[in-house]
Image 1 (tube, rainbow, N blue to C red):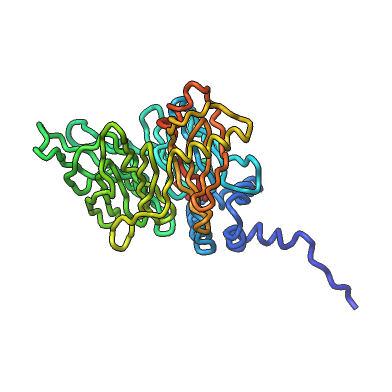
Image 2 (image 1 turned 60 degrees about the vertical axis):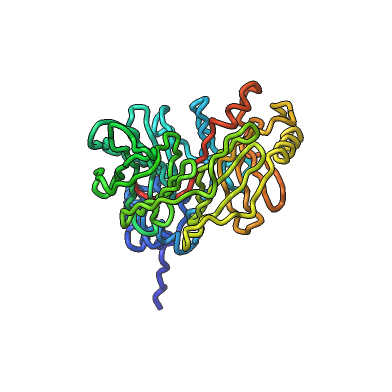
Length: 398
């Protein structure tokens, strides 16, 4: 009787390593972190994992498997006072987990926006760049040649939804040059769109709205770019290329006792929030996507109570960097982090030289990041110089 031959122990690995279709099926099921490491296995693996079609397919598969796949796992924090980037992870598994470095873009890089794993950046040379911080891949955008004389241009907004398309858009609008504004103070603006699949800019529809020189960058959700400034709210449907003008739930109030910060927009998944902050309180409104109405949210915070609680948390950690004064209520709300459960939702706040998380439901404060600032500039930096950008770990190509 002939003795049967057993297969070598490494035979499955040989098969999967040589049969690309089988290998692809296996790799599609692995997490992003593992795939980044496996690029070093061989040139074949590196080529496959870096292929744009595979990268997009992995994102689609991951979204179907886990609807929260595009939830941010951390934040990049930009300190404009020092032109410095800091970062922190939302993971609870490690005490000080790190996010990818942006060193591949050079030292003179400013993040303009984050969207579904991609970052829109502005380099010191004046060039716009879209990059994936996870893979280290980036793409320089061609210069936008706007018609007519140079005039005011809105902040650029990145529009990307990998569940619908591997392509992305960069949207802005430019004021059309006129000799003088209308009696109402309104100007005409023209929408410009960058198309990644064609690598070109094109002009779109025009609209009329009040001038807003201090407008913040827009956000993208459900195929729509949202801009806000003062009481104005602008929606641009990237599919139908239509503009809709609305009003925010707040209006500016100027008097000796109150000073409002109005017009900030936040996003978490497909939910849009409008933010109001004054020296006395902080509150949220949520946009009902069906009725396009702003609904007051239950989240409300008195700034004086926050300042007291934050100071106690700071001194408890033994890292006091600011002498508490009951008249000092300056803080900057930089991001919203929604938990799997409503009671786990927190806001990220810069105060007393720290970035803290505040849980509305539990009324708990946790120190997330020490900005390590000199005590004499803590107040100004916390209130005016910090921006937060979501980090989402994906393989999405640029």
